[in-house]
Length: 293
Image 1: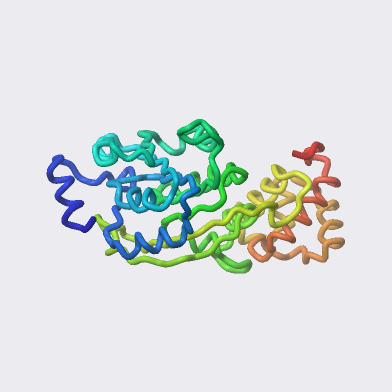
Image 2: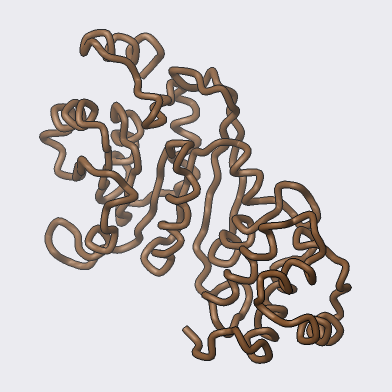
């Protein structure tokens, strides 16, 4: 679908793409092929598409996958999709908000009520809610094999960032803990209609069979990480003391035993160092939870 076809659709329906829903439609067919190739789809795959829009990607996915579950929150677009794919048994359409949708039911069974095989997520994400969608998908790491996601370039750069830079943060560590992230491509605004004001990026997340690092308690590990990055420009020791995650004495011992300089900032620690620190505090800080997940 090109620029003119998208414009014609909205003119015919006397409306415009909705900014609040992040409606920027991909109009470059070459990028469609890049997305599909990145997904490495087979005829045994079940694919969840978030934000099916006008169905261009939906159609391409259905040609390769066993089953496509296309989620679209906009009622006008959902009705257009329903008319377009009414006779395609490979496609299941849902008029729903992905953040409110219970994903467990989608991963349970296929249309014949038999267990589904490989589950993948492919989506052109609404940029304003990319991060909460990411966290929701990560919660289902056991059901999902991989995700191919279009998002704002800035967010993609944060996910693949290395320690020490301004882009490196809690999101970087959270995604790396569960996945192996690969930047597939970057795209300029003219690949979409209407053109967004920012560049975009295509990112592939391959779920890990086991987390990248071992931690005693995941909840406490992520609490340490989030707390550390709340004041990323301050010394990590001071930040953790102020947050009451541990006393100055316990932290002094932790930094000495783990060979972490106390003046270091959160953005300089890699995920292994954060795991080691969280594990030490879990057993030695009085305020840490005592039960493992």
